[in-house]
Image (cartoon, rainbow, N blue to C red; front, side):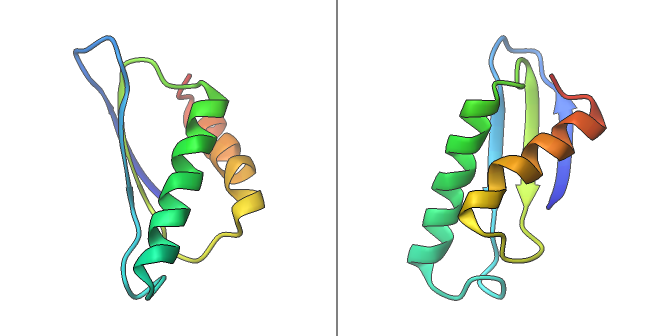
Length: 79
């Protein structure tokens, strides 16, 4: 993942998941990966008043998305 984040002035998080056609050519695969990422972010519960944009740089298996996100969020201190 490539991650960009900043603190926002709202009381809720905002986030985006970006997956290019070069990474996953089929729209259905891109949409599924986005949904799985949104679900993983919701389960982690790290976000409060943060804007986060996640850009996929390679294909990540669905069962590993949550673990990858947990490592990234812990390393940057987003809680």
